[in-house]
Length: 86
Length: 410
Image (tube, each protein chain N blue to C red):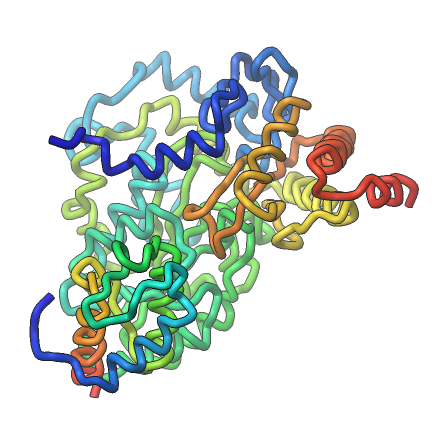
């Protein structure tokens, strides 16, 4: 996924949420990938996305999940959804 | 170049680690002889079946067998065609009429399986401007169905009407239609949807429709077996009911019923309806007859729930964790997949078949021994099942013998 750079606030909020999901102890950077680096399976993805939705007060459509590989991708998507909902 | 199926290597490794090379493999169960609705010969053993979803035990109903035999003789072994080409016989129309009457809905569409009904309806009903809000614990066929839809797909937390409300509120200004998708009874744990609360949320907003999959509640809930909407008394608020003939109705096939005036157009645009062969006439005939037995099956429903309560209370008394109460599904939660597999093996080797269900196919990452009851189970069978659960759970160290003994005494 490409687009504008997400804000550091959004990234920081995602890093904070990810702390409790980070079982591999991988370094959390914007480029960190959910599947390859954090070993997320489909169940963890579901639970994690639900927490992100609550934190940002948004709904993340299932349709966009295949395009979200990294934390940066998710941050961009979160910001786009927040803008659309506003 | 990598082998075609190399991407499944992690799963294959997981499977081999869990199952080893034992002959007793949950994915290779074969019924060598079907003795009745509740017993079969498996690996040379007479086995009590407690995991068939055959809730009312109608698979051997004499009336349905007779109708199926007659249809087989009259119409042959198959229709060899789609419902919209050469595959609609009088029997298919009779079954749709019977469904309309059974549910009190104007329109009914019969599909070749319940999976295809969900796949077809959910991929077709909503358009690109629309939204589908689905319970996160919905069945794989619903997930696959919505994946084929051009609508935006939003999940809400399982059985959480407040979470659904929050998500609908965010969409209130969006012009598209919204469809809420739930199930009457969720298959893995056997828990019911909070339908009254969901209907109340639905009514707060405009342009919101509700679809309920009554696969596990048809024949089980409601005085006449019409499922959760009948039990809750809100059938008019459920715009689309999807279901299957492969559980309480005792055969195979799927359907959708609705009062939407233009419902019939779906016959031309639903690919899982148009581009597949219709059900064989014998299946259709048995479904039609069994639907009548479901409607008048009050006594069967009483027996089913009595059996379910007996098993649930018996297993709980052993010290096992059972996921739901008052449900035809009695799912025992095991601490992890390895223990669940050892448990399952012990049960099958002692003559009890239940479903083994492991993550990611289960909610909350549970490892489950999933039992489903049948109205045709006898009290003696349930007693035997409880005794075998007790024996196996003790043997694998899941419960202590003292606890077993205490249960046996009191």
